[in-house]
Amino acid sequence: MTVASASPAAACLSITRQAAQQVAVAAIEEAERLGVAVNVAVVDRSGVLMAFLRMPESSLHSMDTAIDKAYTAASFRFPTADWSELMASFSDTVQKGILLRPRLVVFGGGLPIEWQGQIIGAIGVSGASEEQDEACARAGCAAV
Image 1 (cartoon, helix red, strand yellow):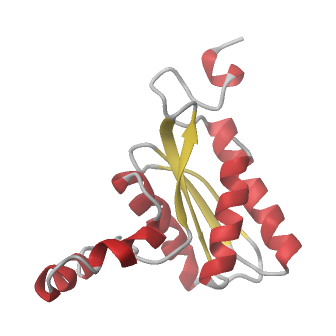
Image 2 (cartoon, rainbow, N blue to C red; image 1 turned 90 degrees about the horizontal axis):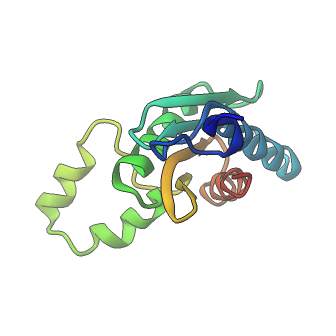
């Protein structure tokens, strides 16, 4: 058995294709349970897209948002929902500058994916309410 098939993380501690698919499917299953339609993106620890699933009824505009939520969570290594609290400590000028950054999402739905204490990737969910996106993302993370 190879490292990639034996664990959700390859030797370089980044999410594997198989694990990324499992995470995305688990998030979609939670969306179905909640009765919402979402887009789900899973990226590796570097923010590169590994898996993407779109529910047919989900908003086309939220496709890119899901990808960017995952990218943001991977690049900063913390949930996208945490930006609200963090930004409160910055000046107005810094806040405006941060918000102008491309691909940065500062609201809920993006979570780092951890395995054995290491961040191996991230998930972004978009298309429902912020709370529902978060719940789907948490369900995806739990699949690892």
